[in-house]
Image (cartoon, rainbow, N blue to C red; front, side, top):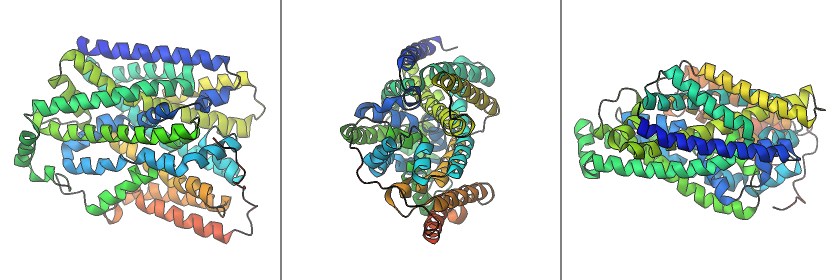
Length: 486
């Protein structure tokens, strides 16, 4: 075991647990359990909003899977990954004040609450809950795998032993603290992610003898490693362009990101978060993927892509510094896992249990159900993670595509088009989900485009056509005028 590396990580976890217990005390004293446990009481300022968005978006695929693919593919993957740079900007500018205002008007605590209030449809609630449950299970599995692989690299434990340790650590503090713990720890984790990225990038460049020497080594091995098309020339301009939908514009449709856009305190905080978040996401995405490419010249021959980042860190940094740097992927993984756990738990408790099973449930029962569901979901994901994929990034991106196909237009058109109705929303969601799953499994990257492209375009077309064709059936839409300001 790398004890000098593990000790800084252990101290990091102690701080995380302390925040979780503190947040739990605040939630217990709250008069509004649902709002505080699942949405943090809508009290986030600019820095906290930026950090929680960045930490939720920057996940195991950013720190573990992404550098692994970049190691294998070259600088073309760095170019492709930079499509994520404006992700926070898109979410907060497009959803922005209008989304937060209407969420308050509907007293929405989850994204599904917003969709139910906008479209007045139980079918939308059920379809949304199914989509969130299925695809976020895939995304959470990717995070669990990433955390286990990291602990496995540090301790020499078996994969399953490492998975158990990681699962217990995350579940304890998420279950007790809820969204408040998630948001507060995200501030710490986001900061650690940025610092760790910069330290490791500088160390890799020094170890490789400078950027010029590293580039020369890559060119000598395979000139395509420094081209925009990847080591095997598979990154066509059409594929790279279409990837912008998946990890750029389409991020607006991710429930775990969209819910952050309804949880901030005021407009000033939102504007500050746009600036801070863009800088933070840019630093992490550029830095970590560039580390993956440069790492190929520094330590060639790493066979499992998900072990590139831990291997580089342990081999080129002093032990204590390595422990600090490895807190970055641990922070990224834990922050994403906790956000997804809270989202799935809120979907089951708030959107299904309170809507369809027991609307009259009291606070004590809701609290008990929230803790039970969060625990059960976490344990179920651990079982799914027992047999990990070779590169977890593909599991994460599969989940991204499914959620975007289901939610992107329901959210955006629901906000900005009064003609949007429940028939269009339901048809769009069904077409988006079915076409995405079919294309992903049977015709992946059809026409050289990312699998999400056609489902997103098809769901938009269907939404508009069905909404226009059913205008006479739809009830008058909600008036978005005369809204409270924030």
